[in-house]
Length: 74
Image (cartoon, rainbow, N blue to C red):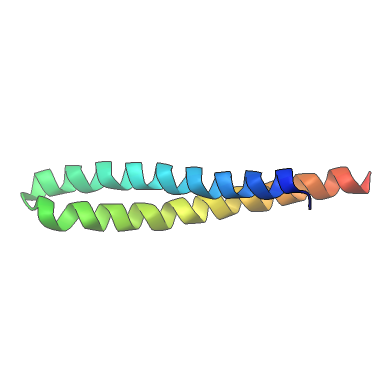
């Protein structure tokens, strides 16, 4: 695997994490406002979003590996 693919993988993980954090904070804020308990639900939403973001980042890495493997074999 060359340097370009390694750098691309790192940026995919970082972008998945950032997107997950943003979505998690938004959902945590909405639930916290509805439950009148922002101090509890914002961190819960943030940590849940971080986990989902990492999972999404790894799934996109798996798809990228399949595409590069197909290109190298042909």
